[in-house]
Structure formats: structure tokens, C-alpha cells
Length: 168
Ligand SMILES: [Fe+2]
Ligand SMILES: [Fe+2]
Image 1: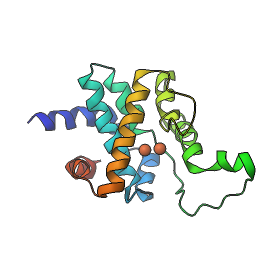
Image 2: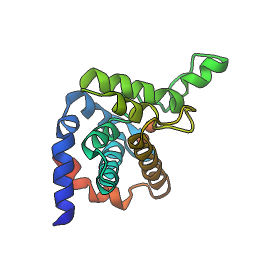
Image 3: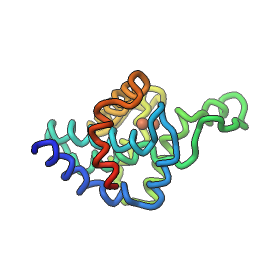
């Protein structure tokens, strides 16, 4: 089956990330009514599909997209300590791409293009625009998946990925 072929390809590319002890910790974090792990797998998978369709470097893009929200602390209910402009920088929407990049670089090999994909995925909330096409794919797919999650909660595409996730 065609879809199974894509799942298998995706799993071969990101399998070491999905089963990594540190990355597995994001299973405990909530994200728009779904788990952060499910969200990350969905963004990774659909970024891979889009990149593959567009004949881009789907290997590199799938890995960066899977790691785009690699933060280990839940932001809901987190106490803010800073004031003024630093308070804005401390807000999750602005700060988590940097945290995700730090974690990704700590546990995996990340090149410059992948670093851009992770750290710019919140554009235009973070004002510096993506520097490569892969980053535009990741930021667009992340917004589509997050919107789907916010509106439909347990979305169909995510359900379709359940078998993949249960094997991880
Ligand atoms: Fe994010
Ligand atoms: Fe995300």
C-alpha cells in the first residue's frame, strides 16, 4: 500500500529520534489538546510528504520538522519572572524554538539548514524570516497541523498516524 510505503520511509528517517530517551519525554507534554509527541510526529510526517512531493531534501526536512518543538517543560502554568521586553522574550511562543534547537543540537546532528527550520518555525511571531525553502515547509505544515488540532482536537490525520506512533 502506498501510504504504508511513506510511513516506513518516514520511520526509517526519524526512527532514532522517535525512540530516543530524551525525545520520548515529550510524550508527557500536552499540546493543543493532543500530546506534543503526536504533534511532532504529525508535523514531521507531513513536512516529509510535502518535501518529497516537491522533490526537496525530505530526509533533512523530516528530521528537523520532527524536532521543531523539542522542549521538555510544559509551558502551561509556567510562572513568568521577567518584566517588560524580557517578559515578551520569555513567553513560550517566542522562546520555545530556541529551546527546541538547543535540545536538538544536544542530542542529534543538526546542520545549519535544519537549525534554521527549527528556530524559525514560529515565523511571523518570531520576526526573522526563514532562510531556506525547507524552513518555509516546516513553518507552514506546523501551522496547518496546529490549526487542525485546535479546531478538531483528535484529528483524522493524527489518528491515521497512530499505528506508526504506537510502534515508536
Ligand atoms: Fe512550536
Ligand atoms: Fe509545533
